Image 1: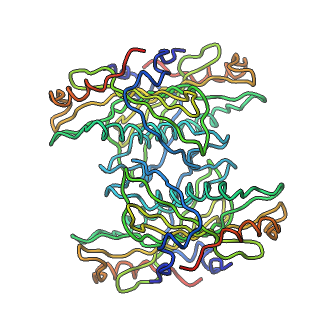
Image 2 (image 1 turned 90 degrees about the vertical axis):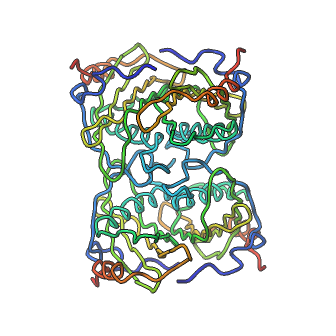
Amino acid sequence: MPRPAPERLSPDHYPHHDIIQTRFQDLDILGHINNVAMAVLFESARVRFNRAIGLLRPSGHRFLVARVEVNYLAEGGFPDDVAAYHGIGRIGTRSWEILGLLAQNGTPIATADVTLVMSAETGATELPEDLRATLGEWRVRAV
Amino acid sequence: MPRPAPERLSPDHYPHHDIIQTRFQDLDILGHINNVAMAVLFESARVRFNRAIGLLRPSGHRFLVARVEVNYLAEGGFPDDVAAYHGIGRIGTRSWEILGLLAQNGTPIATADVTLVMSAETGATELPEDLRATLGEWRVRAV
Amino acid sequence: MPRPAPERLSPDHYPHHDIIQTRFQDLDILGHINNVAMAVLFESARVRFNRAIGLLRPSGHRFLVARVEVNYLAEGGFPDDVAAYHGIGRIGTRSWEILGLLAQNGTPIATADVTLVMSAETGATELPEDLRATLGEWRVRAV
Amino acid sequence: MPRPAPERLSPDHYPHHDIIQTRFQDLDILGHINNVAMAVLFESARVRFNRAIGLLRPSGHRFLVARVEVNYLAEGGFPDDVAAYHGIGRIGTRSWEILGLLAQNGTPIATADVTLVMSAETGATELPEDLRATLGEWRVRAV
């Protein structure tokens, strides 16, 4: 069973970090953060990351989420906050990756790999140069 | 259409306050905090309030939510935090009220009135004296 | 502690019924349908009810949820479906009530009283006659 | 950008199918099923699949979700139901895959690949023979 590469568990790998609150609603019947709730935490942190780096939608374009992979590493709980770390992975012609890590009390609890596709009315389309430049400034780092 | 009493919109009415993050997931198709998401925000703040005042479950007892009333006052958004204000309302023989207010950027956006019932194996049961004493210390205040 | 009037627990009180699936996500740490999830079930059933009775938004108008009251009567579970019953309550000048009941395996588990307000750019506004007529056809019934 | 193999989009690939209701809550600000809501739909269908094939937890053991990959193929909406198709993929020594497809109105909208790990108090542990046999009966099929 392939697991995330070791650098993916290091906060230093990611150029952006944020603090996200957990909610009572995130807990499942075992009292841990449910695996879908973990995806919600990543989503909220990712939207905040996109805003933080000034990622605006070019007019007439949309970003579509094409693929989400979450690897679960340890159980999370409530009410402690989670630390969210994000950076940009692969940048393709028409798509890019946002890579994330959630940690709670210093322990990595999950990673997320999200692929976004730039979409116009006519289907997938090439990334504009200014978007490509912004993404390039927020690449994950070697650790 | 009856609306919340004016003091219910004042943060000074409530002895406890907290900051709750909003999430992208809270938004509805109009881009506002969905009314169910507002109930989730209240729930999360209420559980944190219960923990903050040391409300522990007497062994063999449970608190059940018997009634929730939410009044919507203004639209909320993401990503701004909301301020949550809570205090204890009516304390009955077997039940009590938790009263709450959410505000965003200084504007009251919703109030919640929640009735809890103390339950034992045999059904609703009287509040133990120590619980009654704790609740009494956190009553909402005249403003 | 006031409770719903007896007729509110009778499916015959409501002119519309529907079947709503429960989800694993609806369960809380005690294995019962969480009280916010109950509000989600009501919301989903209510939107379907509005569509079923042909409630369209007059152009330039919106319905806003002004107040939601949920009374919890018994615990619900997964994976059994719930039966949702809805009808129209009080019809005011600028607002109206949607009254609902959820039952699971023949047992009433919760009621909801929702007040909606007709809103235009300029604030709350009077209900148009055709909306008032439609609502009148779906009133709850004496039982 | 790798995409799901063509057979993954065919209902015939999967030995189990079910119908899952969508909810108004599943919609995002664009009026489509949000990508996290898609994960909720898969989760609910997967739990029902596990129950349908009689997957019981051996005493002292738990299944942990180790990895979830969702590929988004087309936009989904409300209130139409989705069809959920599931089967077992790779069966390893200590883990196995559940593979799923969601379709709406005959159009594939997403696939999910979920890896579960058998866990005991002492960590990951081997799959018991009876579990392995049950999983073997529900393998996805060549199409």
